Image (cartoon, rainbow, N blue to C red; front, side, top):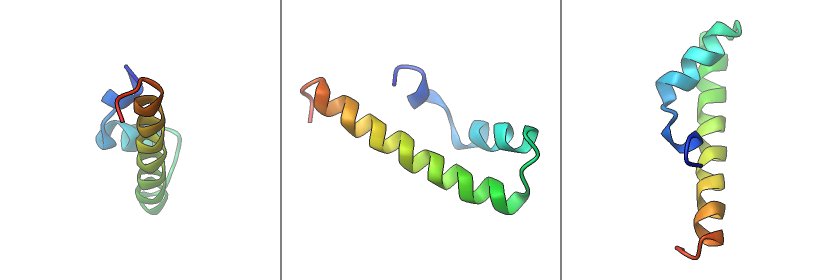
Length: 51
């Protein structure tokens, strides 16, 4: 999470665009990836005893 948590939605979109995603795919996958990153953040926080 030290690095993953720093990735912005704009960076996610740029990566998806570079891989050939359409605008609709970029929107959909950015939201899905952000949700997964947040879930990982919650798990990491619990494992560290901070939540």
